[in-house]
Length: 416
Image (cartoon, rainbow, N blue to C red; front, side):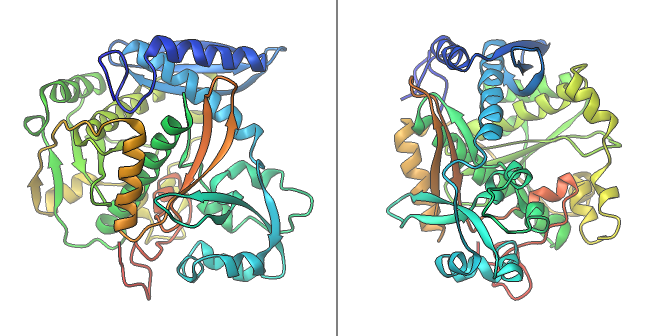
């Protein structure tokens, strides 16, 4: 259970977490450098270099200074391991055999329906351990490890060009233990599904739906203070929304009321604790803005190559409103419901995993996980998958994606 020294949803104190991740870097012989942007709360960037000084990858953290630094160390390691172990545990099988193993609902809608276009090919899959008593299942590696398609296994003959539009490392998370990593991964899956369904409801389908707005008055005192701090840091009014899509799991979305000539930065978070979901969303919004202002080499390169996602979708006008995410227009045109988010800690990490798994099961969803890497001290990288969750949030990156069954695809019941 969380104590004053152990952050919420974690097993270890920040000093312990720091020592453990430093030991992991030492074991790999990787050098790192961390820089802090902003005051408190702030963002931190850790960049990893090999023995020759070549930049390998990096990771961001956010929050109070110590938490931001530790978070960036873990995220940088997460990105390094994802790149190095993209083909971990991959089993190549006939596409026809995979289709037979998958739930028909997964192959009736995109992206699963793309498998039928290459039914005579082979494809790499991973086996996922089912949660809440669910049967283990197989799932395409490339959907959870986007870089796998850059160097597929020799016996893998699948053309990943169509499928990689839906590829995402969402649900891949690192933690001080398997349970810590898995909780983070499951919350991230729920968060991305909630963003997807929000974009579909308000922009793709443009339905007449209310927005669930959370003002500082609807937050515990510490989160209300954070709300005001983030607003001051980004120098703009902000909007915090409750966009929850799975009963029992709160998901929040935070945006600043600013105009952009690039993809709109936002913050999102999901948690069994409603107030903690808001904290995560607000911290992530701050990180997004501070990262955009960073002078770090990868950030500068990204800004130089940046193209607004709506421009990438010029041939798909139906997708452009979702890519723009014009929440101001929806606030002006739709009913507003004021929401309060309570601070309700959900208990020990293992208990939270069980609660989330049961919440998903009650909503007709199956979740599973695959352990990608474990260090001797227990630090673990895991990938969690909820196959029926929506991936439409990728439209904000300029990807040409369409809704699946939960998102109201043609012919679907729209069940969530």
